[in-house]
Amino acid sequence: MIDAHNHLHDPRLSGQRTEFISEMKKAGITNCVVNGTSEEDWPAVASLAAENPEFVVPSFGLHPWKVAQRSNHWLSKLQHFLSRHPLAPIGECGLDRWMKSPNLEAQHEVFRAQLNLAVELDRPLTIHCLNAWGALLTELREAPALPRFLLHSYGGSLETARELLKLGASFSFSGYFLHARKEKVRTVFASLPPDRILVETDAPDMTPPHPEFPLDGLNHPANLPFVARKLSDITRLPESTFTQNAKIFFSPAIA
Image (tube, rainbow, N blue to C red; front, side, top):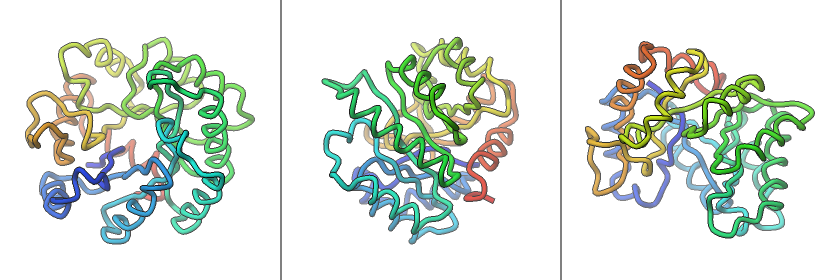
């Protein structure tokens, strides 16, 4: 079982990280993609991957929430980490109009740079998008070429998903969408092509309702099997489908 997106390096998990990884493995999780979000946390992602090379797939990106804090050399730093990790995906990155006072021009500039880099290096790209679906579609449609790309924790409409599918998108489902008020999202995933669906925890965020591994208000990364079982019920697909899709999407980083 593969967690397509988490933040296992997050400081909120630091005190028990070894225990968390042990519990993840016992639960049947064989790999997880750990997403960096800024220049500040890329070293932590790299260190975690070095300590757990058969388990952690490092991914490096500049999140839209972190755009305002970027240095003038952020792109060269990102290229450095990607050079050191030649199989690493790029992300998470994206566009966000939900956040307070977004600098949309800067977000677009940063996202476009990472999109182009993913094409240049032939790396899969993990995308965050909130309240910016039209802008994202425009960016993707106007790009001269597209990499493999994943809409992590996808919460958009079915209509938007259909447009993204035309461009080659894959989509990952997080346990937060198991809350009763997120029925529309579950309906979207039930309508997606079977080969485009992955599963994630986004731990330590996006906690599912009634998790098997409660964690003081945080999302335990070992909750992935619970989320996968529920997603299997929603989509009427075997859980192995999500694992196979993740292997294909993140290949060759995951064998």
